[in-house]
Length: 83
Image 1 (cartoon, rainbow, N blue to C red):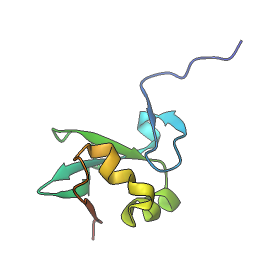
Image 2 (image 1 turned 135 degrees about the horizontal axis):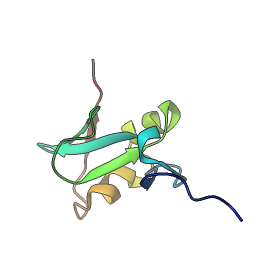
Image 3 (image 1 turned 120 degrees about the horizontal axis):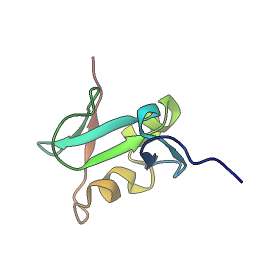
Image 4 (image 1 turned 90 degrees about the vertical axis):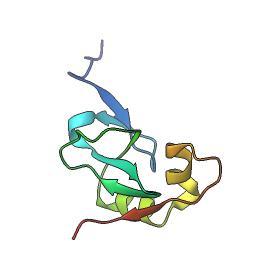
């Protein structure tokens, strides 16, 4: 029987694979833009991305992944990358 992962599990918004929350990058919506929440403590709806390749796809909003994750009813969302 497969072991259950320890702690919360989240799904990457791009590839749709499940990972432990601690292994993902959290994005939060701020003023119409998705920003990286490196401490995973910001309030509001969060979306999770699994790695640099998926982060690039999220930045391009492939398949409307950001729009879908933040449930904005078709309003476009942009990703602001940290410096």
